[in-house]
Length: 328
Image (tube, rainbow, N blue to C red):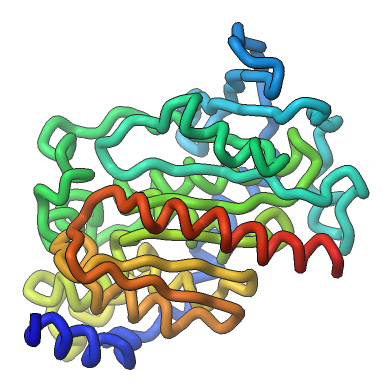
């Protein structure tokens, strides 16, 4: 335990070893533009055993023309809005009055399926609509990533191409998240709270960084891919050659700690000290670079896994933060 205590103390001030690439925002411009101009293609209402909410499944297209699906839960009395044009949403300082409570947009960890409809109802009990992306299948070698079966280095090597960030699998997964959050915001006519664990935590943070009009709060537990250049130092070098500099910039474009610098909304972050997939040092690098309102939760006895205590604390956090947003 003494070792974990010292590790935590060292991590608390860590900000990562590398700067955000100068072309970070321009790199993501095309993805953001696509997301802000994509709309729901179909919405099917599903049978429900409760009168407290309506269940739907929507479809829409991601940047690689793959059709994605998401689950939607609408609390009783809440309906979808007419889709807002991207230009209208970006230019408007205020959302419609019906959008006082944001929708929760949920992203799953790598290799893990979407949460059950029953679980998602806990957010709708607060009066908040819920949108949960049904993530695309991952490679067989990664299917147990959500269990903490792979180290941070193994995950980064599998999903990031240091020679070409744009062709990286991780880039596409972040694109999927951007499209989901933007589509959900327009379809429901309100801002969103993005939330995820593991890979989903990184997706939640990237959406908050790159879609400031659509996202009003973000929450992440054990987010992956923070401080990538340190994780991959053996493969990208130490920044002492032009090739090494280029590789560090490439992995930085997909780094959730770099994205964190652009997040201007309240953020709740959680880290488990025994997590080898999303090391605490990387999570603190991300947290310490968040410039706005933020809170951290530390779990000494957990690894890369679902933490019920964090999920319980989310509800209290949302009640406090959303109350403040609704009265501004």
